[in-house]
Structure formats: structure tokens, C-alpha cells
Length: 411
Image 1: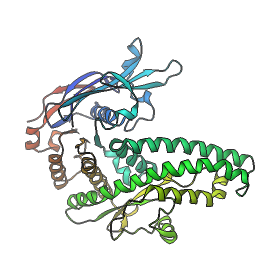
Image 2: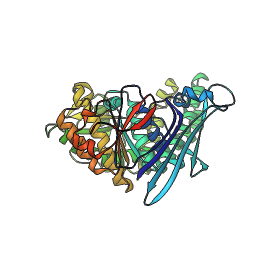
Image 3: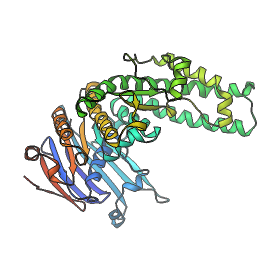
Image 4: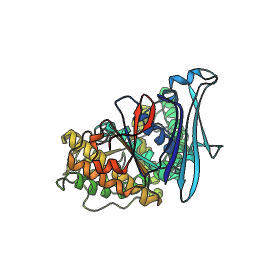
């Protein structure tokens, strides 16, 4: 899998860009706020149909778009895979009313759904702020799992989308019942919630089972990568924290997790079976209706789950240094490349945004060694000296200045 060419129109600070990638490694150098990260964001957008950090579509539309008769922004790329070239396009156009923009997806010039884009270009993006995978809120870690898995498994994405729709309906119903003074034991409560409970459990079970299966592959890879990055000094473990017992924890184990008593498992866990998970989640929802009616919200399910990172059996978020947290986030991303390749048979494009600036010489060397495992890597830096002369000699070197990209750079 190789991104051969990228076009941008009015995307962020790029008025117009036509860029080819002739070599496996591309190194983009430039000062801060010149457009290096924007370029990586555009590539990741083509892979995932979502921005890596924009909240709404209009944020990625550049100011220069206002000069057009119809304000718009466009990302277009040519991807080569198994000898075939596919053209991917995401077009943002202004809505008829308001300031918002709509997103349209085209594949080889034909309008398609965003779901159809997934898997045609796979990419793993690491940015300095990805330390928040360790230090940030649970929603950041859930989003990480969802973005990775949607690139691997469209069926996961379908179940996730359906789960989110059912969740919205169920939460709306819970609020209506609460405002109407309903009690948990009333027959109408069971009757009205029953359908949504079953749907939520069905789709939630598929989401949860797939997350467990992916983590079972990802966790040992991340642990091995972290062991090398730390100079073989530290042991990393990643635990999945569910909101109900999926079958292997038991009531006491679930209580210990909720209390923050984390222990790495002695042996890898077998991924749970969706049918069994669905039954457990549905039973949990039925026995906790009183709490959910009082809250007016669904309190259990994949939408409230989390990941915990342990370093030598201590919670990394609470007890790790910033350097250790950053190393764990980098190890996770490098492991994601291997896990995605193992799951799909295609090595994803690796996008590294200013990854070297906060790493010591040994960790920089480990990152460069990891590049040998990918077909294509696109990296950014503010300083050419972040990379060895040997690497610079092999890379396609580009400079980014104020949304303009030109060839050249330090030998």
C-alpha cells in the first residue's frame, strides 16, 4: 500500500498542492505553523474519513476558499495497492444554510459512502499530543480503538455506528421516562426499554468482542516495542476496563478494577464470544435500571469503557514520568502498524509528526529501525539534524514554508 500522489485545494493553509511521493521515506522539514502537520492530517483524513483533530468540517476549510464562487476544500490522493491504482477524494462544500460544510466522498470519481473509503488507504499517525492516549480522558482512548479498528474491519464500523444510534435513542427514552416519573419495576418501563436493551446489547457485544480481540494482538506487540525503546528496562501492559463483567472478571475482579486495583493478567485472555457478551450486557442493563433511570443515561457499554497502561505493574498515567508516557504512546503506535499489517496483510502508511524532537539518541535509532518494516513513511521535523545523515540521504526531502512545498534540504 503506497500513497503515490496527493492534491489539496483550500485545505487548512494550503491554497493548492500537487505532491508526488516517489520514495518509501519522505521527510518534510519546516518551522512551526507552516503546514507540515496539516499535510499529515490530510493523508490521515483520506484513510479514516475523519480529521485527526478538527471538531467540525468547516475547521479544515482554508480562508482562501472564500475567494471561490462556491467555497470548498478538497483532499485527493492516488493509492497503489497490489499493482492497482485507486483515486480517493473528500470534498467539503458549504451548506445552503449556515456556516457549515458537508463532506462528500468519491472513489475513482464515483460518489460513495464514508464507510466505503475505509481500508482503501490505511495509515497510522503519531503526533506529539498523542501522549494524551496515556494521560487524557477515556474518550481519547476509545476513539483511538475505533479509528484503528474501522480501518481494519468495516463490520466493526457498521456495528459501532448502529450502537451509537441505538444508544442515542435509549438515552432519549431514559430521559423521557425519568421526566415522566417512571419507576424501574413498572411494566411499561420494561416494555419500552426492552427493544433498545436488546439492540444495544447485540451491537455493543460485537464492538466489545472486536476490541478485546484487537487488544489481544496489539498488547504484546506494544509491550515488546516498549521494552526495546526503554532499553529493555521496563514492562508495559495494557488492560481493557469494561463497565460490566464480560465473563472473565467476576464481581470481585470488576470491583477491583473500578477501585483502581490494576494487575496485569498472568496469561493472555481469550477474546469473548459476542453472543455471550450480549446476554451479559442485557442482563446488566436490566438489573441496573434504577440507576439509569435516575441518571437519564446508559451507564454501561463500550461507550464508557477505558484502557489502562501499566508500567512495571504501576499505573502509567498516575506514576509515570512524561518521558515514560510519551514512550508508551509511541510504542503503541508502532505496534499498531504491526497489528494492522497482521490483520489485513497490508502495511499501513506510517505518519510521524515531529516525533524525534523529544527523543534521545537511542530512541531515535529505534524509531528509524521501525521504518524498515513499512512500505511508506512520511515524517516531519523542524530541524534536519533530528535525522542522521544516512537517513536524510535515503529520504525524499521536502521543505514546507507557509503552505508551499518545495524539494530540497540538507544532505
